[in-house]
Image (cartoon, rainbow, N blue to C red; front, side):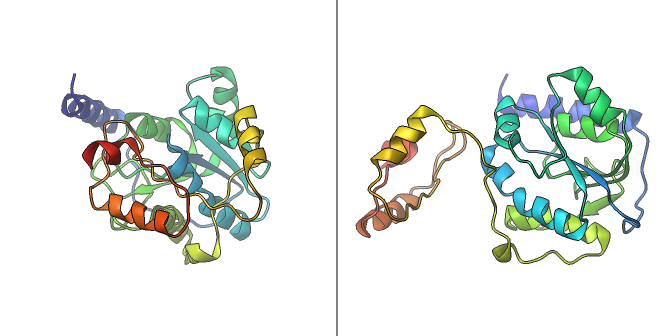
Length: 246
């Protein structure tokens, strides 16, 4: 089954969900205090890192808020597992009793789906999780399922797109440049510890040039850019796709 076939099947299931789900009307802005929020975390590390500025701003606007993250991959669960600032991290595809007890059986003030593309799992959980106010990005697949749809151009920086959730409260998001993304403290593997011991000291900078999945390619014009970085004295490693296309 190719990617287009999978896309059509996914969209058909989403269409069925939209038919059977209770319709929600646009409520305008969210009123009242937000004590608990549920955020559906994306499946990739980069997307999750760029979700952290929103977590910071929510804690600043609503002191004492309990933020529950719902994740769909064990790797993302481990990524956020040691973040003490979260009220809970829940793996939707495992430990079902805990997930039902702490997420599905509790009424929350806010739910946020950060995906702008149609996702069956994200829409299903958006329907199942009880929340007073539900927010997602504007999409034909999201119409009628949320109380507020955020409108942002697709090319907008992902951190800004996430922080646009704050508009649902009538709050202007802070500039992302003033709130740096963070990595939760966590244990590291022996391989990473050994690598750290090999560094000569001083400041170390890293640039992630991952194409996210093996069947994607970087455009050819990026490869000279990497060469220019190398000419400044940085050590680098080409992504496999650049080696293949050069």
